[in-house]
Image (cartoon, rainbow, N blue to C red):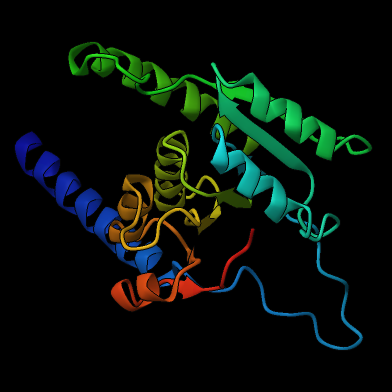
Length: 218
């Protein structure tokens, strides 16, 4: 009897999980909210998580943020790797008069780190990322390629499945990617984790038809 009940629970749980997963995949890419009609209440601001990377990734993101509708995407939370202080400094300069929050996350793997030791650091990074995402629970995640964004976006996808928070992931591939996607971009594209996927070269859009070509943003 107990065995039968256990099997039934497993079947029900599996069915519900698969159904929810299919629903999430179906909803991925849909608009955040319908546009407000005339006379209706104005749209509410969306809490936004901005994932920064080092070097060119941060330069591109800062350029993108400079034209962002600040009142629409607020409050804003900035995350960079624990070893990347320069990116957060640039973000603070951009947000001098706002109440944005800035935080750091452990890297899954540092440059030159062995794959064996990276298993442990990846687990630490995932645990830290889970705690940060549970604390922030953003409605929008904006990222453009650094490896730091992958665990955060995966956690956001899992949150969608279990119903903790629906975070729409907006991914903008780096302008440096002309013929092929970066590893981060490829993972988010192939796994249908990114709700909106943007590329800056037309040949990339032809190769990855679910992507949106937006031209050069720099």
